Amino acid sequence: MAFKATILTLYPDMFPGPLGQSLSGRALDKGLWQLETSQIRDFATDKHRSVDDTPAGGGAGMVLRADILAKAIDAAAPADDPRPRLLMSPRGLPFTQKRAHELAEGPGAIIVCGRFEGIDQRVIDARNLEEVSIGDYILSGGEIGAITLLDAIIRLIPGVMGNMESADTESFETGLLEHPHYTRPAEFEGLTIPEVLTSGNHKKIHEWRMSESEKLTRDRRPDLWHAYMADEDDVD
Ligand code: SAH
Image (cartoon, rainbow, N blue to C red; front, side, top):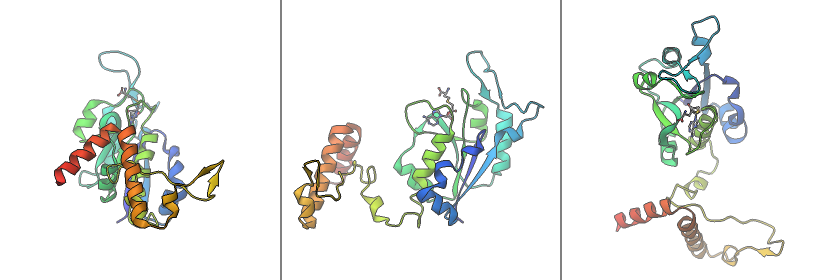
């Protein structure tokens, strides 16, 4: 069974969006993954089809109602559906390459996209939603977050990327940021390609790339660098 994503949203027309293009688009056409959307509004019960209400305790904005969202979740995924239930949320654990791998190896994901101030806490608790954040900033809705998540996952599904090797050295895969890349022309605005890369000496090339990776990571991402060094120490 191919990886299946079910998106619960108030804006189903946002999908597949960018996921319908390029690598993920071709994979979707080939059936390497499947996409289904569910319009949360279809589960509204009043004649205005409203899905939100004012926050208990007062304050700004509106909150997605628990009863309506729960019905949408139950219709999209019966209790025995093995797929993880994710809720896009700035309060969630930050999404990582490691989580992308775990999800790519699984049967798929049910992804709830919030809007307004967020969703009623009771549906998070009652339906066991795992909150996932794509970074420390606030988006206006979960849809772009869901697209980001899926883009990262889909390229890891076997058969989607032509050359799986290219994934191995990528930033975060090794715990380091990736080294710089160069291609033709040999000279660009007076700038040349580092000599070692045209030397044909594969050992030297590997060493150069590794040292560039380490330098970049140390300078730009002390957080990753410390984790990497701690890991190296564990191995010793
Ligand atoms: N009031 C909330 C933010 C609501 S933003 C708070 O302060 O935590 C509206 C919706 O956009 C959220 O319910 C969520 O689904 C989505 N969203 C916003 N920022 C996000 C982020 N960094 N990662 C994932 N989803 C996000």
